[in-house]
Image (cartoon, rainbow, N blue to C red; front, top):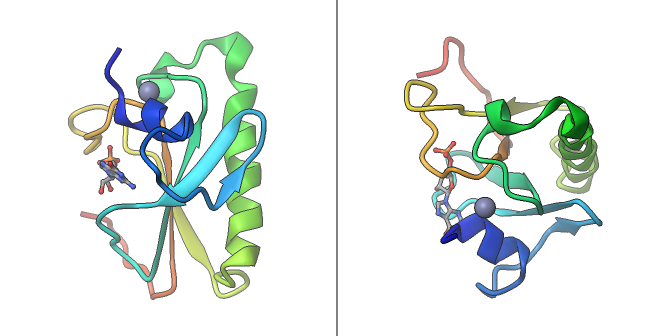
Length: 113
Ligand code: 5GP
Ligand code: ZN
């Protein structure tokens, strides 16, 4: 399977990892939409949030835990940040490997685009 995020998680792209544990890695987004824009992904491939089976749903907590740590590390807490999980075509997902966007360092607006 040809998945760019799987390759990054395996360390094959030379992408600097900002966070890693047994199940999760995080790295800078290639096209940042905020002063801090980090992608937090599971090492294991899931096409989207919808593809996480009930027995694996704990991985979503793992992503959230990593985001908590990164938010403190990057000093975007307690000022605040946004977590986004684009899912499917109308959700705006462009890379088919589950990922959480951690965005911060500027005032976010609502509604999102
Ligand atoms: P999505 O649109 O699927 O929610 O988010 C995919 C994100 O991955 C986009 O923000 C895009 O900039 C980022 N991205 C796509 N390819 C790469 C890559 O090769 N390296 C990194 N670091 N980010 C990527
Ligand atoms: Zn993948």
